[in-house]
Image (cartoon, rainbow, N blue to C red):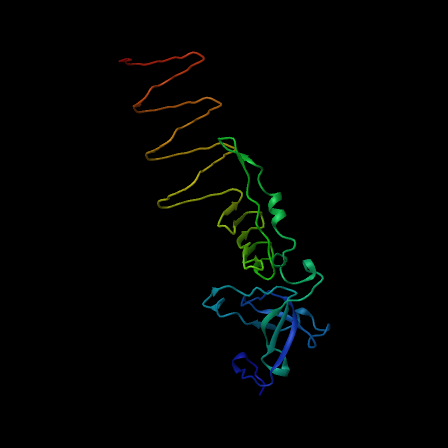
Length: 294
């Protein structure tokens, strides 16, 4: 008996197929796709007349209780599968996709160009990068270049239709003596140019446009080396509690404009060494109380 439902499938009269995906729009959103199957669907059959094909997902990816991820198959993908209803050929089940040469794809192949090391994001990121930035001590710094040096097939790439990219790159070289040069990276890239990249030595580069960060609890920052902060615009700092600063070295401040301080409470200053004040203009002191000099 030829089954009319998936539940009736027993395996008799199995019929395999290879086809091309023509639609991934499933009206009931179950991840079904439409496939034009070689040797079965001629040009007289319109795309909308093709039966929907179910897809097999890895057990680690989904298909249960709405969890996991959905199928990643796209239109024009070449797929392989089986008809569950044998020669009736109305119940296709897609088991997987097959890489292929294709003129319409960048580089002429369906494999991602970032995996092959061609047409990379490096130049695009450079063009969107920042200019060398000067800090308080006058030494400029620049955003580090990407260490991208992919070796096929060590870079696992997931790229979406709109250009979002996730790379997990295990690329590395070894010489005849067993010495390894690593280019391993983890890279998350948004089509707007925002990205986060982890370099082989553990350095992390983050580049983004406007930012917003909220910490609903406590927050701590520990830097074992130097820290440099440069703000091209204004810096506004509001502290609703107390501020405690401890500096074990010296403090140097250079202000090119004016300084205005308004203190509603008292001020206590203690100098354990000498004090030198140099004023090239006028100095005015106004008090509504007494001035006591000892």
